[in-house]
Length: 397
Image (cartoon, one colour):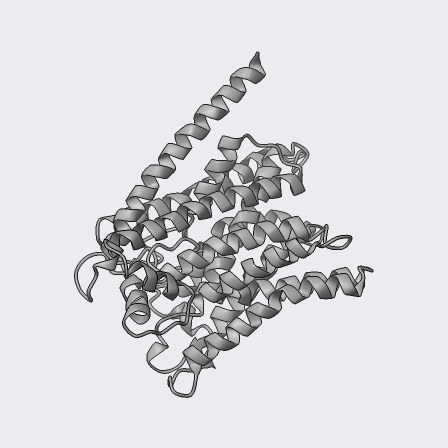
């Protein structure tokens, strides 16, 4: 009888959350529709009008999203359709995060009801820096954030990246014995699509995938298996070469240089503290798991992804007129999302594992409570900022 009531509560909770997602989707359509109308001044400032203009008017196809905009702007009510398209991408990202978490529950032997998994997926897609006005006045600029609503290529890239991660988790153990042609094609296409939209995810994911495959080879996995799985990124590398020509070709006058900490420091009131507050929840989780990092391949992988994202934004900056655009930040943003996902999984497992810090009950409850509270405020910070954007304020607010 208790199990039946529990299932009923879970079903009701799931239905409520789905309804909330539809409301969220409607708000996103409103937001992105208004962003398409921004003409250089006024409310709802975003990168979206520039992305549309580069595709529709300038015929500048540096991202696969350009083809979507060209198509949509041949139809009536194109501004509304763009709003619906981006809102659908964001809702599908939540669904993809849900699938990713379900796969992670399986690999970490965690049991959670559907409603709790969906709520976690929603929360992870609102995560922003731990906002403290005294640290940095602005909510977005000056911090580093995983949740972004003003850049359409990041929104679309994040959607596909989530499915890349989900499918990668399904293959990383099974490829050693069997990798079907269908699985190879699906994964290759997913990685290529994410790269074609924005190469930022591949730049932080591919090096870690290479390291994991190299470790598997050292441990005895057949070279043919490792080589075949590694070939899945080759089409994406070709796409990056094409993007490099479009963005940094000789005719563009654009290039990139090494300038440590430049991007992280620009427009930030207290860049070093803001850097910590942007990753505060994973930092706290890391303190309590520093000794077992090497025992958890997925946790180590997320830290490496974050590390590559950090080194990219720490070292590189575009030169000339694009030097203040912080375009090397996008890889760090998606790496933050990955780190928050795995850190939340570790925290949930700690909550369920009564042996974790079991001898130190006060420390255990203190850690779980403080870490949970910090994560909750990361989410609140994101909802707060979304509310600011919905009011028409600039993302510089």
